[in-house]
Image (cartoon, rainbow, N blue to C red):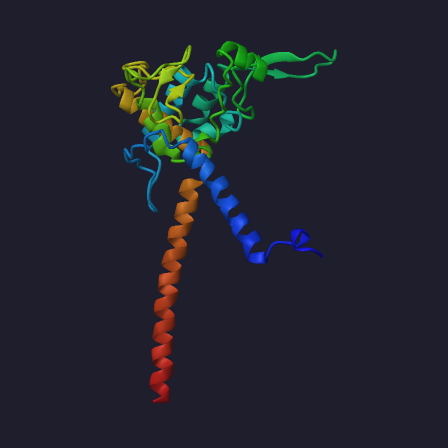
Length: 262
């Protein structure tokens, strides 16, 4: 074989693959490099012993219903899950009955609408993605069921996005129908500011500031994405206590064994 047809040395191939991998892994970071790092407001569920505040969860569900549900679905949330955030079963049934879901076919083979029950999932505000795009200037509103897990920064990012809307700098040319948000990649977002001061009237009388609404709905959407969080943390705490006790017991047994030998 001539020199021009020889395969490159293994170290050259490895270096090329490594460089390519670095470029690919850096692409998302470079794309989001023009956005601000999210704030860290501090949530009750953070840390190894953190738990969800039931008041925040219920208020967050109210914000979702009154502010977010017109555009964003929660397809993985069933009404039977609502008692987990502090609602009674009767309250959950009453909430479900506010929604219409498609069921069937009936005896004549026709689909029909009926009030939702606990076994149903939250219905989407749109019949399909095309209808959603048509109603939102071509943009497809994402389902919010797993939004906290799907976005880098999680709850901090979502909170920052909700409170981060501001007037664009004078040197920034905005696209048609776009809003300026420094926490969003590219700084221009198709969704206008969804949360307004006193935009909802909380059932518990809490003052509905922008900060409070953003905190509450972020807490609620974190629970939707990780409803098992408290159980997981509780199990982790029990395991750690068990391991500590086991370590102490093994140490005492070791001392006893070695003391007998000496």
